[in-house]
Image (cartoon, rainbow, N blue to C red; front, side, top):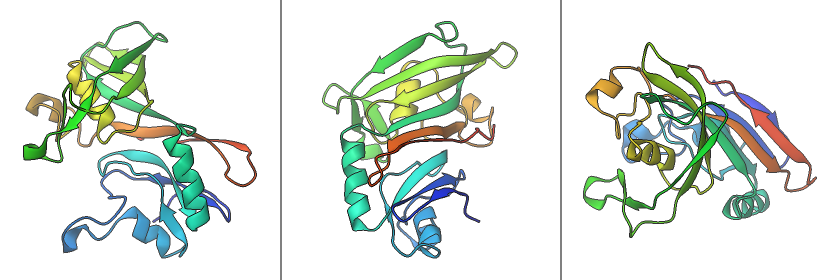
Length: 210
């Protein structure tokens, strides 16, 4: 079932469930994906950006090549703003409502792909974050994340790099970390963009299912 939050002749905004690929992968077992499900109902729908398979939340698709070019340009120029909610291992400082930042270059770990690593030879990568809530009993922290750059696995790699991996992360977490959640606790919760045709400012939100 598709969760379509908005549709018009130019774009679609969808709420992707965790565990669903955005585009087809390699192998017959990886052909079911969000883009193909959407294209069964909207034949002109085209991919603009992606979420990791394990990540849930907001995603925009273009309708037609002209809209795709315009939205791709908006993403490339950082005119689309995305916010995520995650739950991470440990009690993350600073105090609530103070923004922190992670500025660490990310490189593909070629021998262990699709993993990424922090490496001086990597691409510049910048993440803003703030604490939403501390869980003293579980020793976890709910955080809001803003990826200023858009590298693959950026949020997951950056949180691991500062010693607070996202709960349920099978790629970057520890066995103890995996035991605290049944899924990756990362959700694309807010999406802000300017409509390519009307130039109207648009804001979409989606509550995390965790």
